[in-house]
Image (cartoon, rainbow, N blue to C red; front, side, top):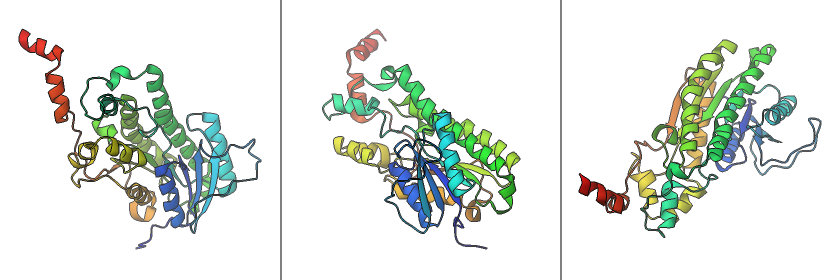
Length: 317
């Protein structure tokens, strides 16, 4: 039984490879000798499929890296990036659908906004779903759900079209990226939570039913990270002394946030036929044992119960 991951020479396409977590995933696959195609809107755009010049990459490893501009929410843009990746590196065996709008780029709302408005003291009744615009809600779902669907469809169509390569196509898998927010919700970010719930729920199960009908070895799984030790998370903890306790200590068994590298290693595990050949249709929670959310920090509930509206309601009762 092989004890290595067996990812050498596998063509791995990663959407969102230019981000913080995406960069860690790219480095992880390169370290295993994979041929990595990173697709991201942050990569330099090119004029045509015939463009030969490619920017130098900061990453290194035994594998090879090619970077392509591509917008997962734009069907034509994603298809163009995919064609270039296949032309230069061959059929895509493994795909990591990581691109999306996450909490590091979405505007601060909910508990974050409350803390800012209160001058660092927490509490407050603003923010939440009442302040989310329809345009923002639709935009988040368009990128995070439709973009993931387009990526998954492109991968599965590519597997189907590469039938002549099936004899040597290893690690044929798709790894979706969900979130703890998809299980427990996220006050102030209903768009993000709804999108992640859709990805790691109905979309994953539907893909798991379809993929083996295209290619018997094709697998689809997801990781659901959180709370991840990102730059945004550290800034929130610096702004609010209670944030670390609320998100990563009071509600997780391990009592600490998840390193970015831990998410990358979990994706490697799911990508490997040697390690995960019979893991299919599953969500791997990489969340330090997350059990839920603290919905009412002490100062919030005190402020809420002492508000005029609640005092009046108590008198009427």
